[in-house]
Image (cartoon, rainbow, N blue to C red):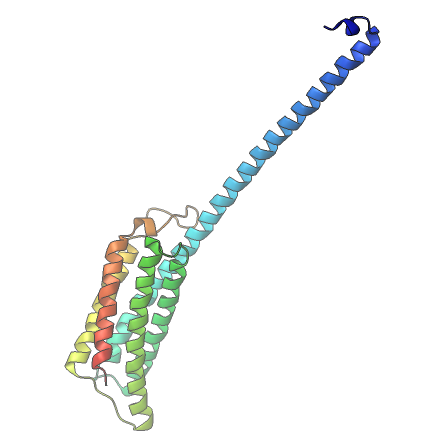
Length: 227
């Protein structure tokens, strides 16, 4: 303690000490408030992150389920479309149904692909699914156009040959295989609404990409032999 302080009045020394203690109390209070605020922010961010993932996985489930259902619904439509024993109006309608189902499936595959960063394995895989379905939809649309032009304008039926029919049947078989691979991501033991989860983490993405590539390749060949 300095000599000048020893000779200061007692009251003045007390006031100085009170001032120092007051400043320390304020600093401590600010520090505690900051810690509480940061803790609150952390809890809020954690809650937001959970809400984001839950919403993402719920949307992913609905999209994957619709994708699988649409692909599955298109398969009998395609088989009926090429069946020459069916009336022309029925074949035309079946081809239109298949085209609509495949458009819906393609949109779902695209929506799943953009849930992940471009270039990621998940995004690349579902881009391949989208391309495969797009190519399939294109050859179904082409068949529909051939049926329509003959049936509406010439009042006759367009008949595809056995090679073309066989290729369309191969398309439906490959779509079944792809749908099965996608279905493997669904966990029947969990309620996707109350306990959301990532379907893609349960899928064999490499196998899906390979199956999609085969389906796309078949569609390309089929397009090349259509009139």
